[in-house]
Image (cartoon, rainbow, N blue to C red):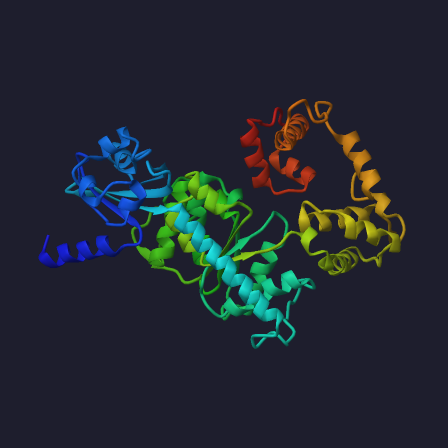
Length: 472
């Protein structure tokens, strides 16, 4: 290594905000960044006199990410608890020379720092919203053109204004919120506001693509890449988004190997089709969405920290429908107009139905509201839609409670002796899912019955150790 290379490496290690370790192939620690001492409870000099094997045995590293790389020869990421009681996320990468492992470079970030950054961002966002309410900003006094969106509530108009501000840029936007709140609709509106509005909007549900097909679907393939490949090959979804917006919904469902591939595309701006050797440059604006807490997924090792940083540039949280009931009338009227146009009728909502619609909690959010309205429209024999025409749907607190008791599996019961609310809810959820596993023939059918997304059903079944018992 030249003197310049040594000086450059030294500067990187000594000035890095993250905590760097440079470990030799036998486990001896060659260098450590100064900031690591506060996290791991040992001085830089003491750390450089020991090995990662000893540190793991002494509980300073629990576990050692460098040892994991030494065992597998592959990059690794782990959540650690240090001897000082700190929780950190550590990543490590192997260094090879002529095919032989010669060193491991790792870096870790204290999750306390991440939490402070998130709190700081939340504070800035609150101040920004207060500034807008007081009339600040050039758009504050003007009407926001929302096209097909219904955003009458102050909360949603603030979200819309934030999106309009960032639309002219190419910054990655992370849409957060419960299933069914309208993340896809707002992503489409962001695309319409952007300079890329004449380009394509490619909508991808990451939870719906099998892992075995993900690479060929996203990156495409060349002719002859595999048996059954289309003649001439095929452009992947990323190439199809050229000049436009690529929207990755349910991004938290991506398997770790696919997360690494997505990260490389974000960093390099290039993709390589399956079976090809030529890299192709791609140009699209990335917007992602999830109903998961990605920070917790990072802690649990299910989501890459470096990808989280890349995606969490402009986080936008869409509130659930129960927190913005002012939007319900507009959503109902808009969807009712669609249904009337589709079926060639002119049905209306009965006046006494509005109290029920406005008072319901809508756990499935906008998606549940639209599903209820379509079922009510189809069930109404007259041109007036009344709340009692669809059994098991929002019909007031008394009817809802009765319907729940009638529909509940026989295994559901009240709160047991010494049982907490959380454990009772988990038990009830498992009972309902277990009953549906005996009745339904697919996770999509269960999702339709519960009014939630199919990936959410898959996660819940995995959490409770359940699977569908029969197929048709």
